[in-house]
Image (cartoon, rainbow, N blue to C red; front, side, top):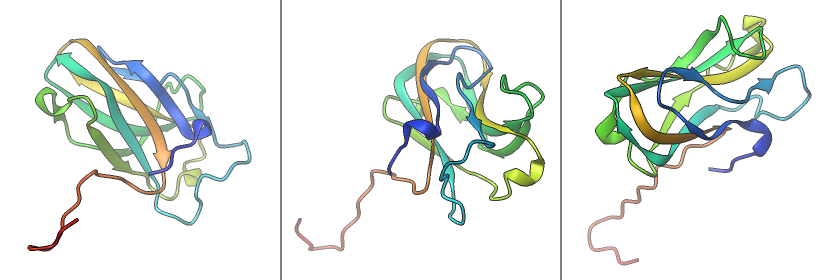
Length: 142
C-alpha cells in the first residue's frame, strides 16, 4: 500500500465522538487519484481506541469543504473497540462514480457509539490494500 499526502484526509486525528475528517480532498483540483482503478480509503488506528463501544467508518462526499450534509459513498459495519488496537487497518471500497454525485469534496466520517477517551486514526485514499498477512504452503521455508 502506497500513500500520498495529497490523498490523506486524517492524520493522527483524535476520535472521541462522531466527527468528520480534519481534511478534505478537493475533487476540482487536477490530481491523479487512480482513475480507472479500484480505490479504497484505508483507516489506520495509530493510537489504540480506549472506551466507547464501536466506530463505523464512512467515506463521504459533500458540496461543502467542512463536509456538512454529506453523501455516504462507502462504509463499514460498526467495528467494536476490542478490534481497534494499534496498527489495525480497516479498508472501505470507494464507489468509482465519485464525480457523478456532483459534490466537490471527499472526506471521511467516524460514527462513534459511546464515548472514547483516547485513540487516533489516519485515513488515506489508496489503490491497494495491505492486510499484513502472509500464508505459505505447508512445508515451505522462508
